[in-house]
Structures are given as structure tokens and as C-alpha cells.
Length: 264
Image (cartoon, rainbow, N blue to C red; front, side, top):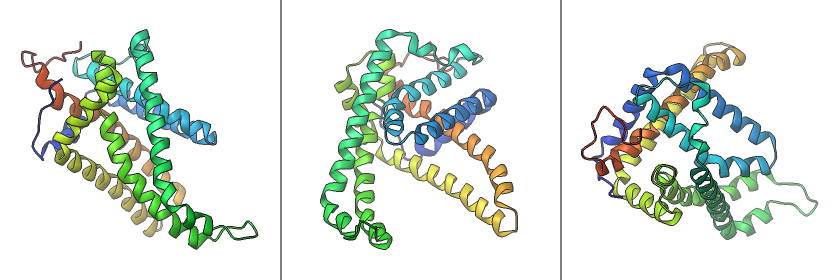
């Protein structure tokens, strides 16, 4: 698989393309945004095992998201039965499950490696009577959080394109991880702009909430206003995944009509 090297501005272009996909079928993608949020909420209600299951399911959720964008671009109206259709392929489903387990293992390993150097500080935050020194704990977890953040960037690069490479192209897991890493490295500056832009967008939404609270609106009212805004932003974010893949790996389909999808 040949990965294109794109200009810095492509990071913002991916967001614009995601918005264009969203505008074609906003209700369908809002439904998926709502369902994804519900899945995340339920997962966090189940201590430890829920979060682990959610991490392992991320490649499958990503693959469903990519297929929905593919169908929308192809002009197909997303119907209820179409969301899980990509998982009917037994080989693709098994490969994505293996990818999910690999993702879970990498995240757990990353968490272990990020925490290990700071174990003394973390243990010191626990007093002899078993109570926790909250100030010391907050200071102690700063190092692991920063370290894991750096490690997670590497993990994300490994797995970013892997669901599409495995689900659509039947590429073996190790090869898919390698191709994804190479593609992300070649396009590190567009991905930097992409990540920073989304961070700024969600931060602006939070600042808007704080401003509304400062103007005297109740927290419940602000939450009522911001919930649909966050759902729309999440839906556009999900729609933008497809352009990040096609703009990088679409070079493998030079004869493809630009109005069509090579996977239809």
C-alpha cells in the first residue's frame, strides 16, 4: 500500500470534508454520534471491564464509522440495517476483533510503561493510615499522564488506518500497523494540524459553556444547549475519519472516478 504525503493544510481540509459528509446525511450521523456516546457511557458505568471492552471495540466502531461515510459519499441513504452490515463478513469481523485485542494490549502496556517510572511518587501519596494525600497525588500523576500521552500518540499512529486496511483490504495485522505508522509519519504535520484544530474546536465549545454560565444561565440550561452542539461536533469528527484515509491511501486508485468510492 502506497501512502501519499500531503501538505500541512490537509489537516484542516479533512475537517472541512468531514463537515461536507455530515451535511449530506446529518440525521444519520447524529444517530451514530448519539449511539457512540451511549456505548461510551455504558462502558464507563462498568468499572475496569467496561473500559477495557470499549478500548477493544474501538477498531470495530471505527470501521463502522468509515463504512457509513463511504456509503454517504456513494449516495446511499443510511438505513438501520446498514450500520452493522460491515461486520457480517466473518473474516473481517475476526480480523477487527484481533486488532481490538492488539489495541487493548498496547494501551495497557503503554499505561504500565508510563506509570512504572513514577511508582515511588504514587506510593508516597498514600499515607501510612491508608488515606490519600490529594495534593501529592495530583502532582504524582502528572508525570504518568504526560508520558502516556506521548506513548499514546505512537499507539494512535499504529492503529489509525489499520481498521480500513484490515477490513477493506484483508491486509495482515502486522502489515496494517506498519502501513498505518508509515502513513502517519509521512503526514505528521497535517495530523498535527488536524489534532490541534479539533482540540481548539472542542475547547471553544467548553469556553462557550463557561461564558453562558458566567452570564447567569443555570448549569442545566447550559448543558441542554451544549449537548446537541457536542453531538454535532462528534458527528463531524467521525465523518472526518474517512477523508484522512482516502486522501492518504486513495493514491492506490489513480483510475477511480473521484465522485465514486473504490470500495463500493
